[in-house]
Amino acid sequence: MGRVSKGVNCSVVGCSAKAEISLPADRVSRYLNVSKESRRAYLCKPHYKEFKRASKKEREMERARYSGL
Image 1 (cartoon, rainbow, N blue to C red):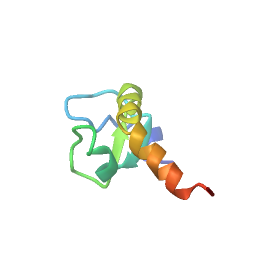
Image 2: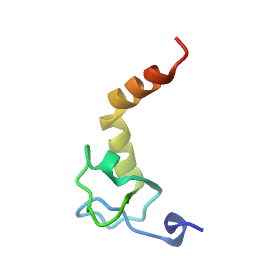
Image 3: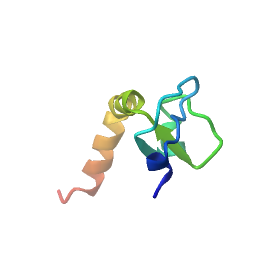
């Protein structure tokens, strides 16, 4: 049973919503203002959506690097 299922709050500064997903904090901190207290960043649904939009180009480049082309 992880922290998200236990009801941890979102790690974005100023947000107190319940987290839906956890990601590496160093990756998320490039795009969102998250607190630096742990290695994991916990994001609520709206902030996860914002993170996905902001990091779309980087994720596409990462997938292209490992494709079998």
